[in-house]
Amino acid sequence: MTIATDAGTCGAHAEAAAERPGAHVGLVLFALAMGGFAIGTAEFAVMSLVPYFSVGLGIDEPTAGHVISAYALGVVVGAPIIAVLAARVARHTLLIGLMAVFAVANLLSALAPSYGWMLVFRFFSGLPHGAYFGVAALVAASLSPPNRRAQAVARVMLGLTVATIIGVPFANWMGQALGWRWGFGIVALLALVTVLLVFAYAPRDKVQPGASPLRELGALGRRQVWLTLGIGAIGFGGMFAVYTYVASTLMEVTLVSPAVVPVILCVFGLGLTAGTLVGAWLADRALMPAIGGMLLWTACALAIFPFATGNIWAVGAVIFLIGTSGGLGPMLQTRLMDVAEEAQTLAAALNHSAFNAANALGPWLGGMAIAAGYGWSSTGWVGSALALGGFAIWVVAVLDDRLARAGSR
Image (tube, helix red, strand yellow):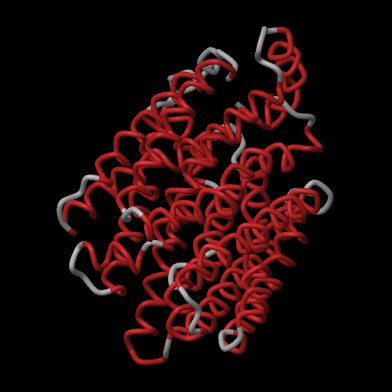
C-alpha cells in the first residue's frame, strides 16, 4: 500500500465509514483513541508508581525502573514481529486481537507475585503496543484528507495524552490509596472497553491487495526510514529520562507531599496534549522543519529542569514545557508514511518501537546518573543531551534527503 494509494482511497474509506450505521469517522477515531488512552495509562502510570511498587516488590527505585524498560523492550520486539507476521490480517481483526492481549497482560501484571514475574508480564504487556498504534494511525490517516494526516494521527494519539491528564493521575492516586496493583487492573478494564468499541465502530476492512511479510520487510531497506526511527529512539529519550523519576524528584528534591504528585502529572499531560495538537498542525504545513524545531525546543526545556526542581511553581511550569515534546509523535509517524512507500504497517509500528527504545534508554541513563550520585535533578541534563542527539540525526536525515533529491534530477 503506497502513500498514493492511501491518499487516493481515504475519501472512499471515509464515505464508507460514514454510511455504515454507528461508524461515523468521529466514532472510529474515538474508538481508536480509547486504545491510546489504555496504553498511555499503562505506560506512564507505571513510571509514577515506581515509588510504590518498588516497596511492594522489595526492590530499590533505580531497579524498579527496569520494569519500565521491560515494557519498552516488549514494544521494541513486538511491533516489527507482529507487523510482519500479521501482514495478511485485516486491520479491524488485528486491532481487536492486540487489545485483548494487552488486557490479559495487564491483568497478570496486577497479580504479579514477585519482581521477576513483573518483568515478564510487563514485557508481554508491551508486545501489542507498537503494532496497535501503528495500525490505528494508518486507519485514521486513511479516513482523512492527505493534507490532514498528521492531525488525524494526533487525534488517535490524544487518547494517550488525555491518559496523562486523567488516567495517570487517577492510577497514581489509586496506587497511594488502594495499592499499586489497582493501577494495572484499571488498565486491563480500559483495554476491554477498547475491544468492544473497536469491534463496534472500526471499519471492517479486507486484507490489503498484495500484502505480505516480504513487502513489509521492504521498509528495512530504506535509509530515511532508519534515520526517522533514529530521531525518535534518541530524541524522545530525553522526555522519558525526566518523567520516569519525576515523582521521586518531586518528593525528594522539591519536597512536596505525595498528594501533590498527581497534580504535577496532570500538568505534564496538559503539556503533552498541547504539544500533540500544535505539533500535528505544524507537521501538516512544514513537516521536517517542525521536527527539527521540536527537538531543539525539547532540549531547552529539559536543560531548564535541574534549575527548577527547588520550587513547586517553577518545576510545574517546566514539566508542562517538557510535556509539549510529545508533539514529536505524530510528526515522526507522518514522516514514516512519506518514506516507507509500500511497507506502511511495519514502518508505522516501528515508530513506536523507536519511541520505546527511547523509553528504555532514557530511564536507564537517568537511573545511571542518579545512582552515580549526581542527584535526581541530573535527569534533566541527561534528557537534554538525548534531545540534541536526536537533532543531530535529524540534520543527517535532512542532508541525506537533499542529496537524494539532487541525485534524482
